Length: 183
Length: 423
Image (cartoon, rainbow over all chains, first blue to last red; front, side, top):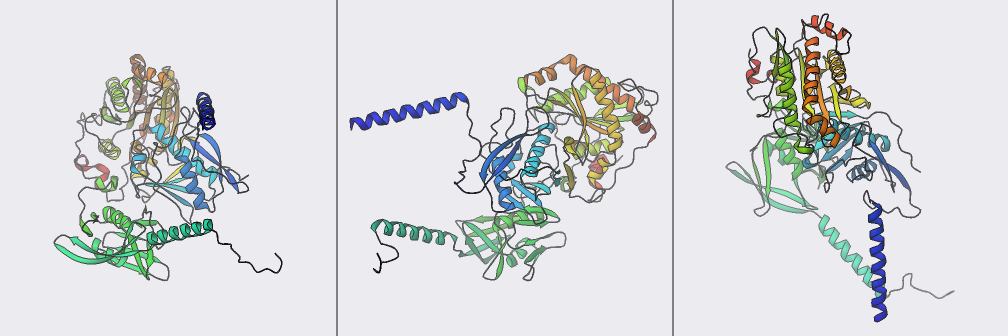
């Protein structure tokens, strides 16, 4: 019994040490913890975030299980975009705790991203809104070559404005970019 | 081992327990997925009638053919193509079974539970009926679980349907001296609203202060710099544009602020393509020649104005970027050259310091005023740009009459906005 208590104390000390060491180094866990099973196919997901300065999105690469279809890949990417960035130079795209309502990729290559109204109704300047859209479209261009355009919806429907400065009553056409390659 | 018959699976207590757990799990899952028919009452005004609805996986499903009468529409479904429709005189909605994308008057809607066949008949989820009712038929559809009752009633509040649906508010145009050439100035937001920054900075107050400063500095014979909103009553961007168009503004400047970005000022112009220089294009749902097309027709002249303003601000020693194109709502629908001036980085120490610097604001106002007066018709010829050279765009604008805005999709009442439409 005494030996068991000593062992438990030692384990607790080691755990606390690891926790403190990681905390001190500022290690950030970004993205949902999705285990890639040994031997399973995996891909690099390029996640783009608004930069704190400038207009070029900040890119982060995450190793994730390979989705079965373009629709699944889009769903996976949008889920990743909802996670906070690891880079100190980047801003989160969405408020914490919110998840996408629905994501749909139509046969003609239009991605419909349906977010809760709370994810879009927040004070944001024109520049910040432009880099918000730019980051999402860049991420889609890098990961989902099947997507040609993006329509933003709030609670299932279009609305005149995205967050306040940009319109949402139309489609944002994806620029041609080199997509991320599966390893 | 050889020749001895053995059972393929040896039954142990552990395996029995695992099997029982799996069976129980499957049964629970099956119970959850299996649909139930619910006998519901439909309350619509004074009328109450019965309706069989389905409950599947926590979602309530309504027969498509019953949804028509609920919304005052005709329901149809083609089994050959799986396409379904709800049609009334003014509204058409439709989609395909097993697809979450619906269309309503050409606009997309997305539902989490797609319409589907149950027992050979098409069903719509309550979510879909609510969305269609709210946005297409001004009808609220609500489910009362305790009473097993579907309540259908006229919508209590207006859905956020955008400019096309809400161009009915009466606006009063600010007074303008007779014969004056108007320069429209837009604070962008009302007091204490919009993006926030350090030291109590906010987009609304900063925009109003800048617009007032420019108005006070833009002084010339025959030119009236008019504030299109006073910072107290929030106006939609299309309402501000309507006022500017009604006053036949010769140029328009809207002032904004952003929490992030590089300290200094960015100058934006309307552009459907190459948003922020990133190659992103915006393709509006509205028909050609509509509200978006009005701003598009002014792009060349807006570029000339924006270049002149950006050069003037830079000459005043203020970090400046642009002009950059973006489909900004603040510029949509304007029938004159128009720019957005945005103070970036209000949430950074350096950006806030610049935005709060009174002397810098005065220099900015003077630079913008100088550029506007040089650009405004009648003053352009011979007036040097801030950079020191005459701007061909300005000279062109001096002789090109402002074209009237094209009629919007709704027939035109909205483009000029209520009372503002009346001269």
